[in-house]
Amino acid sequence: MKRLYILQTLILLMVGANSGWAQRSKYNRNHSKHRTTRVVKKHKKSKKTRKRSVATYRPDPRLLDPDYDPFLQCEDTCSHVHGIDLSHYQGEVFWETVGENTKMAYVYLKATEGGDRIDAQYERNIDLAHRYGLKVGSYHFFRPKTPVMTQLENFMTQCRPGEQDLIPMIDVETTGGMSNEEFSDSLHAFLDLVEQAYHQQPLIYTFRNFYNRHLVGQINDYKLMIAMYTDEEPVLIDGRDITMWQYTSHGRIVGIRGSVDKSRFLGHHGLRDIKFNHVRRLEKHVSFFDVRQRMGK
Image (cartoon, rainbow, N blue to C red):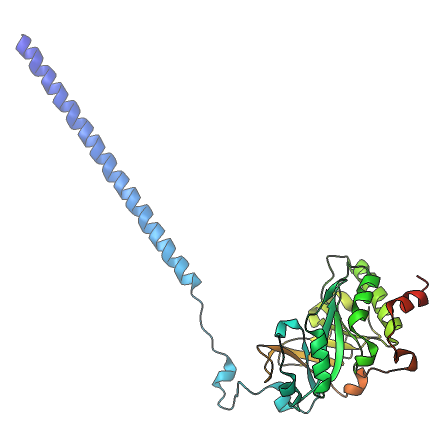
C-alpha cells in the first residue's frame, strides 16, 4: 500500500512538470513571435524614415544653358549705375583695387548702429574710398527701442557732412518687438532728427517684405533702396517708386574678401538723386548740441 502511494505521487509530479514545461514552451513561442514582429516593424519604420530624409537633387536650370556664365554678374549685363555697401564684416578692403573697378561708382559704408555701436572699419574705409575715387555715403542701422537722440548723437560722431558725397542712409529692418504704431512713431522721430541735422531727407534701406508688412503709407516722401535677392526687379505692394535695388548679398569684387552687397539704380534714377547737397552752414561740422538747441531740448 505504501509503495502504491509513492508511485501515485511520482506520477502526479511528472504530469505537473510536463504541464508546466508545455505552458512555458507556449509562452516562449508566443513571446518570441511578438518580439520578432516588433523588431521587424521597427526595422521597417526605420527604413521608411531613412527614405524620407533623402533629398532629391535638382540642378539649377541655368546650368543646363550652354551660354550660362556663373562669373557673369549684374553689372556686366546692363548699363545701370552700380555700387556696393560695406561694413566691418568684409574685413580689410584693398581699396586701390576696388577703385580700379570702373563698374562700381559708389559705396555706402556702415558708420553706426543703435546708440553706441561704431563700425570698426568706418574711418579707414571712408578715407581710402575717397582716395581711390568712389562716391561715398554713410549709413546707420536703426534700433527702434533705443532713444532716438542717443542714436542721432552716435551717428553724427561718425557721419560728418564734409566727408559725404551721398545722402545719409538709414537701415530699417526690425521693429524691435514694438507694435506697428510704436515702431512708426520711433522711426519718424529719428528720420526728422536726421533731416534737421543734415538738411536733407535720408535714403531708407529695407527689405521688400519688411516694407510691405510695416512701412506701407509710412514713408512716402523718402527715397528707397529695396533689398530683394532675385533675378527680377522688386515691386512693392503699394506700387511705390524705388530709387535703388540691392539685388544680391553674395556679389564678388576683386579687392574684397568673401561676399559683398551690390546694388544699382532703377529706371531713370541715378547718382544725382542721392547726391549730398552741401550748404554753407554744413561746411563746418554740425554738432549734436546744435541740433538739440535747434529743437529746444
